[in-house]
Image 1 (cartoon, rainbow, N blue to C red):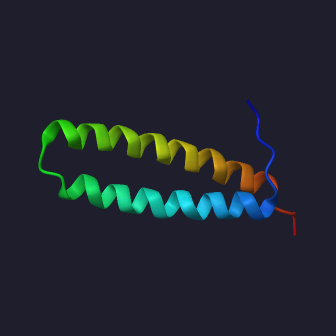
Image 2: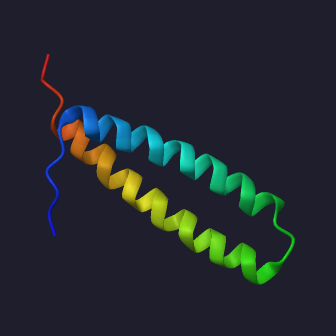
Length: 65
């Protein structure tokens, strides 16, 4: 499935992903249970990969100066 988002929506998505990544990273650091920490790390990696894709899309839409 392909989503078409406006520049404003992409910026908002990027900001939300960054915030979620920061919060999840803190959760990984403060989780004592090893299995839970591994699951959180996997989710964190997924969010980071998605953020990289969004950031690449945003750079592709930036006007050249």
